[in-house]
Structure formats: structure tokens, C-alpha cells
Length: 284
Length: 284
Image (cartoon, rainbow over all chains, first blue to last red; front, side, top):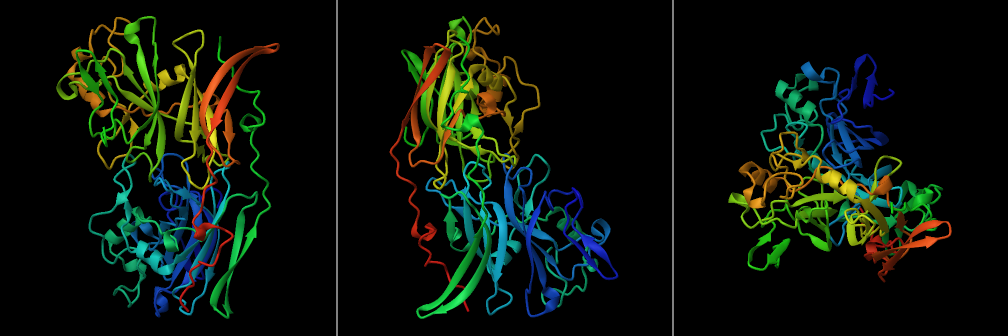
């Protein structure tokens, strides 16, 4: 919808449901990469839809412009709220997906440009393994990484502290106050609470959900680092599929990784180490 | 002085003068690289000492750990203040030295690890040209850059807005209020104001100077970008000297750049693309 980014659902005779409009806390110039329904329990009422995307970091999350990879969630049975969130998702939450290499000096190297996602089913449909392809944001240092995430880590982040700030000049901090009940992000069902529809949610839940769409903690990859990085080549990873194979010595996950055909970063002449005539001469 | 970082002066029978102790706003684990006296006017009373260093970004300047390159200043004739800044510099200010390559996507690639500085004299001793060697902070993407700065850009930043925040959960913003007179950072002399010694400064100047040692704006390099970057090699730049030479077709600045002998970054086995057996296998 032009500059109006949305997670949008039309569903038969129901009114369409969408994300809050023109609110960069919800979505900030996202690029959607993947979407998947993942059950939360044996009760289909608890099913959630997960969105994988990259978007601009929120104002104040970073001193400069940056891309963050995100995972977002809504409940399958979200029919919007009332008052301030009529026909808007009331169970939308998002968290940062980190894919970084720890630095010896404490300064990590981030792969933030989420390119694609593959979900490998395990025997438990509630817990697929998630493989993500990430590239760097820099046009000078180009590299790719594969990170792997578990649903339990993702659910733990969505059950953790909400990101909160008082006003535009405050920093984002973990919300320390009382979170209203039922906790925003919980699906209406008999599994985790007694309410029947998102339209029944109390006012304080709606108000809180509207202003707290982001989680404070990031989802870390398994083992806290990529399983592969590739930095010394002139192409980048674009797609991944993973297959489980049985071998004599056990099970293996075999990754099939597609690459683009990008040429090495082309530098303007003034940045090319081989071309130095353009150095400004100080006035005499 | 162990973990107590300071810019410290002993001067004959005068009491030593130093930076505020245990205040990360003043110095945050700095590594000093260069120091230089540079005249501000024809009056030696206005002379300033400039410090070039790198240090940890201030809490809240960056969502994570980061190194920033800095230029700091004190007046040669700073003899400390009174009340809260007795025997402390009252003219200390610092600003970030940026050496970044603009990104096509608005996300810049930063070279923040200031390694060395060379000042090339021009005919005007007040306006040497400043060459800095910078390297990247990442242990995955290693590169070097040379950036060039003018004193007029540096003075403009020190005369610009002070970095300000209300409390630990606020962001750093440009200070919008009334800056006390004489402006903190000005040297006592007859050139720019009538006061005779830093010890004569009014209380409000001392109080403001103590809590506002950093400028809000960064010093940008000439042409807003490095004059050289080097990214595809297994060594990094360490030192620079610049010579002015006359040629038939005009004047040239010839840079002599020293390099280290670092080996390529050694990755732990799990990050080596050639060694993939350590991928965790999801539970069946």
C-alpha cells in the first residue's frame, strides 16, 4: 500500500485486520521475508502466525541509521480490539533477531539484513528449527551468515520484558511496571486464560498493547553465534533449504545455500586505493 | 594511574590540574594517540592543547559497546575552577571524530579505532591539516582508512551545541537552553572575553562545564569521507606522515603510511566455512 506498510488480513465476511497505521513503533519500513503458522499448543485456538522481516531500527535504538532483523507474531484468532485498536491486531509483538559474531574487544559484528528464512520441521510441529540467511548492511564490508534459532528462545523473548520509553527523548528500557492481564500477545483460548475473543480484552490491555509492540530483549541464535559466515567472496547468500539425512554415524542437517551473483562493491574513485590524485591540497 | 584515566598537568609550583575523576562523561577508558598545542589567535593566551584519542562510546550513545574516536581540548592557561572543579580543567571539551564511508542505503561504514594522527603545518600555524589513521572495530571485517580534518571544522563543532541529557534513561540531545557566559571552552584572555583566569569563572559556568564535556555534533572529515580506505588485505594501517612536494604541475601531499603485520582474523572452528561438522542437530 505505497508507503503504508502493514500486516493485513482479509477473512471472508470479517472486517480486515491490520497493524496500527503510521506508527513506526509497530513497523518501520519493513521488508517481509517469510511468514509461517506455528502451533503454540495442541489447541488450534493458540496458533500464531510468525512474520520474519527486516526494518529500520526504531528511533533512539541506534545513533544513526540501521537495519534490524525482526520476528513478529499475531494470533490466528485475533479479530482486533475495541476503542483505540478497532480492526487492528491486538496480539502483534515483535523482537529483534540477532545474528552477530562476538568480538574479542566486546564489539560484535552484526549481520542484520535478513534475506530469507527456512523452517525445518522436527517431530514436534510446535518446535520447528529456524534457519536464517543474513547479510551485512555495509557497502564496504560484505558478508553473509547463517543463524539458527529455536522456538523456545523466541517464546521466551515474547514472554520477557516489553520495550518501553516515556517520550521521544528517552531511551528504550525494559518496562518495569505492572503488565496488564491477560498479558498482551496471548491468544484468546481456554489454554492460557479465560477470555473468548480479542474484542473482550480490557481497556488497559488494549492501551498497553498499542504502545508496546516491541520486546526489549533480542532473540539470540543457538550457541549465540552464526553457524556459518562467509566474508571473503564477491557474492552473498540469498536462500537456504535444509534437509535431514541419516548417515552411518548419525543424523546430519545438510544446508543447501543459494548465492547471488553480486559483483564486488564498486567504490567511487576517491575511495579507490589505486587512484589517489583527488586528495585536496591545503591552502598554502 | 591504573583504572583512573586522566589528562593531567604538573607545572612547577602550581597545583596539578586534571580531568574530573571517575566520570565517564569526561573520559571513558580512553587510549591517547596524539597531543598538540595549536594557537587559536595571535595571542598566546588563547593557545589550546588538543588531544586525539579513542574511547568507549558514552552510555546511551549506542545500543551496544562501541569505540569512538575523539578530539579533546583544554586551554594552555587553564588553572582549574573553584567549588566543584578545584584543580580540574574547566575548559575541557571533546567531540567525536567521524571517519565513515556513506552507504547507499543510508547505513554508513564506520572506521572508529583511531590509531595515529599527523599534523601537517600550513603557512598559518593556527590551521594545520590533520590526518588520522583509523581501523575498524570488528574482528571479522578488518580495514583501514585515512581521514583528513580542518581546524575550522573542529572549531565549529566546539562552538556548536553541547551534548546534554537529563538523566540516565534519557537520550543525548543537543542542549537547547541558555549556555552560561563566558561560553565553556573559551580561554581566559583579552581576545574573546574580559576574564583573567579560569579561577574567576562564575559558578554557573563551572557547573555547566562539569556536566557538559562533550559536544553534540561530530567532526566530519574533509569531503565527508575517507581519502583512502584499504579493506582487502591482511594488514592494517598504523602510522602516517605527510610531506608537501612541488611538482611541475603543482603541489602534492605525499602520504607515507606504515602498516602492521597482522595475520588475517583467525576464526574459531565453528565459524570457519570449511569446517561444518559442529552444526547442532535438532532433537528428533
